[in-house]
Length: 282
Image (cartoon, rainbow, N blue to C red; front, side, top):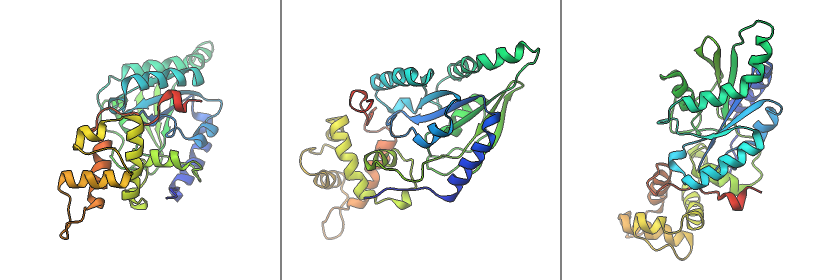
């Protein structure tokens, strides 16, 4: 299964961000805490090279707490600033504090000239990692469109937080060709790719293999199904346990795949990080 998705609006938005880079003082780069390496766009890192950056491991409530801590420390060493965050529940103060710290050199430089600098912050990341939710948390109201599917934000938009802070919301940006299909599968199971381009049954079997490695016992605990054997056999066992059967008695694996993916994305299998720091950080 070759997973690729790079629609025209992403290429256009990348060009637009490039044109506005001279206005940007700080970049907030959102990643999904469940796959903190694969959801960090290498293309975005190249584009933002040289900018003060904060990596925000969003959706931390869905990820393994210990793993999130390890990845946060790792990215803090790499970029100078990183925080774990739940845009739906966490107080905005921790992120605002990180932004102010990253912007401090710029603020000080302008203060020496007697100028009160307005800090402009780009909020960026791949689709469906919660960029708009982060902005809405900082604003305190819904000023950016949110959704649980990729592609909700289609253009750049400025959002004013205060007289000295403005945010630039941007569409989710992937990169033209995802070389690692293992990374592509992790991005897909986290819901960051358009579902219409995916074979959900094949993707669900990949998720089963990921879960057996990252969270042994999670499938058995949720579905009372055996985890041993081929991944497609485990999916069929899940279908039988849930009663997803067709008229001829065959398992409805398409329905089972959709439920497994939805329940993983919704955190119903527990707090799971698909990328273990010790295995993937190097």
